[in-house]
Picture 1 (cartoon, rainbow, N blue to C red):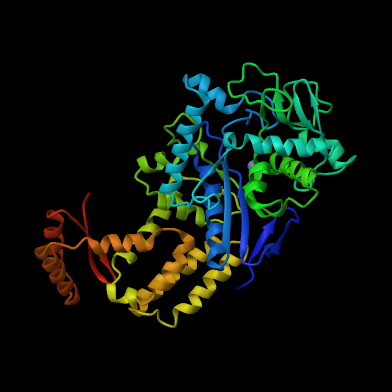
Picture 2 (cartoon, protein in one colour):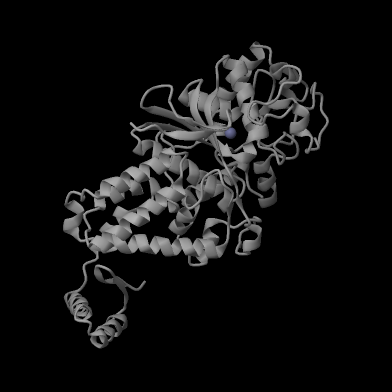
Length: 476
Ligand SMILES: [Zn+2]
């Protein structure tokens, strides 16, 4: 196994990744709050996790991955202020919170599938809903209370942040003091909590809140942060190998997850925190037809863009770099995607089953080295394109096994594209015209070749010239 390096926000350095248990990686990712369609910036973070998972798997690891769905307790401000996001949408749309959560969860899963993002593996293929884990959250809150890091007052159970951190201590991830961490945010509601820095584990005495459960402290609902600690530790153990999320999670949500988990267990919660940079410039794209401010995947599809082009666009930047969104940039990625699909469609069947030529090995080594160097996807992508170029140049198509291994990380579905194309056998007379056109091109009889192109187009085919000959696609 080659060493795999990744940037750990805890140490702020690129570190060699070594899992707690050899060969197995425990991975937790903060999932969506399901009250709106997920915009493309959100989808970039899920794509980053998907790529990380796939890269670890290519390195031979088994990846135990858990992702949550927040369907209660996430207030319009990350600091417990404002309204519950799900309930706000429910009231605005005249639906129950459950209906809102179900609806936006389905949209989320549909977008994941269109982007070929794999589902979590623990529990197999399932997302963990917060509302299905209320008992786990209550049990964890009780452990925190028992160890003296939380207290109960009339408005809820709060985590005692100053007691946990110690006087003047800085956050482990944010490296900010509590004052620095909260200086830019005005706390909207005064309450009976001991300090403005304390955050809610369980909210009490909010009779207008639609979703409520019984607890040892009275009827109420969980705070937002506790679900991630409860669900990750339930399925993956008290110390996780990797925890992922967007950069925006660093100062509050992930600091709070660490505080909750470590105060309850007395053990380190996470060994590697991996954070993704933002997709920026979406406001200027002006293609959003949904209610949100930012474009969503279906906006791209309506603009004639394949979801795989967005996938390639994201792979073209490092996960730690901000990525500037523009329709032109995504369209450029679509051109790359067409280059991939054309190669897959024109694969001769015998070359797919033949062993790969020796020269492909160095490309594969460079590919895996790029990934293992802090998930350098732009470089890995460039190596893949070079492999295809070299295959054309050498007129040697014995590359399929290498290419599909690379695609197990890129996730473009190359084998599916090839099979689909191979199963579309052309009618005999069309195949004859295609073969005649290839002969004409070989003889440089371009007049005849153009006549045959027009003939094929008139019969409903798109005609593409590839280095391996004429490729036909029935027009949709
Ligand atoms: Zn979380």
